[in-house]
Every structure is written in structure tokens, then in C-alpha cells.
Image (cartoon, rainbow, N blue to C red; front, top):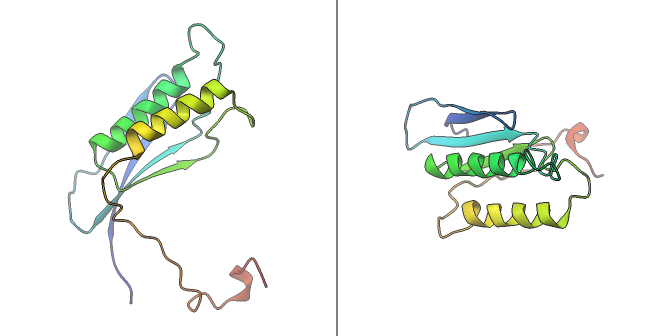
Length: 128
């Protein structure tokens, strides 16, 4: 069974100084809204006295926009952290931000499933 769904995507341009929101205003019950943010690089210049909080503030602002617009899903692509081993401070702040904006009583209405019977082509399988 094929299901057609309208897709609204919130696109954020993230340059650590400027966050721009682009939104399709069409509202529908059959619409999935996805906020996409890429290359957040949390912890970038964290020891800089002026720009040290920029990446975390931007991440917080991204999740605030997601919450304000009641999006169904936030897709974080690219590098979430600037370092492959982020500092404890950056990890703590990231967890704090995620808990503030992503945890709660709201039910998850989005379910992504895969039917292996439909994917019979062996080239698409990762295991034998």
C-alpha cells in the first residue's frame, strides 16, 4: 500500500551568527514536518571568551524553533560536535539542551518502518 504524504521541511541555515527560517505555510493533518540542521559543530571555539557559547546557543535556538513550530522530527546531519571527543562541558550542555527541548509528554506520531519483503534486491542488503 502506497501512502502519499505532504512533507513540510524547515530549513535552517546555520553559520553560528545567523539562523534563518524558511517555511512552507501549508498546514495539513497529512503533513510531516521535519526540521533539518547540519554541521552544528558544538564546542567550536569553546575556550574563546567571545564566541565560546555560539555553537551551543545556535543549537538551543534550532530546537526552540522546532518546538515553537511543533515539528514532527528534527534531523541533524553532518557533524554534531566539532571535536571527535567533545569536552565534558560541551557534552553536559548538549544533554541539557536535548532534555529541555526534546523530552516530554508529547506522543511520537512518526513511525519509520522497513519491510524486508519489499527489499528483495541483494545489492541493498548490508548482511548476508
